[in-house]
Amino acid sequence: MQKYNNKQLLPNLIKSMKSLKNKALEKDIIKQHHDQIVFDLKRAFLQFITLFLIRQGPKYSYEIKAEILKLSKGGFDIDRNNLYKKLRSLEKDGLLKSQLEPSIKGAQRKYYKITPQGKTLLNKSRDTLYPLLSSLRKNIVKR
Image 1 (cartoon, one colour):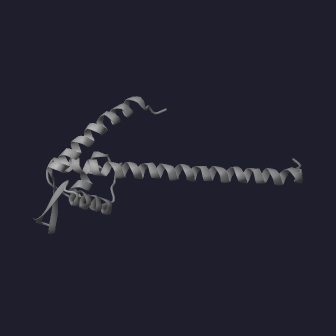
Image 2 (cartoon, helix red, strand yellow; image 1 turned 30 degrees about the vertical axis):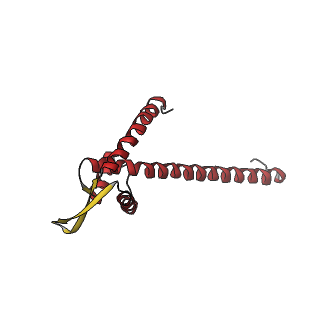
Image 3 (tube, one colour; image 1 turned 135 degrees about the vertical axis):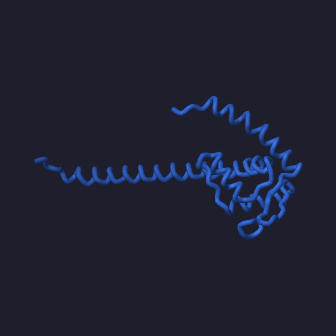
């Protein structure tokens, strides 16, 4: 049976507790920053992908949300309210136009169509993003 020195036991216990607390804090900090990175990426990506999808043809919000989820293989599930806010903002700025159309399944749907200004923004954004993403994909390797 091992004997413990009471003078050493308490400092060792405190040291162990501090170590556990520091690891928990570190884990919280990592989670907090990771969540912020994901939030920022989604926010930045939403405008581009929304314009991209609508350029293919008029779409209503549910179609946009479903296509984003499909294209991202489930990795980018956008909050419906954030999508509505983005659509209203893009329309207010003249990058999209909307039109209400009847639906076989209930209430009318608001379909969005890209404007010439929206196409210009999409093209300019694509010209900036594609080389950047290509470079990142090429130069950043999982380690």
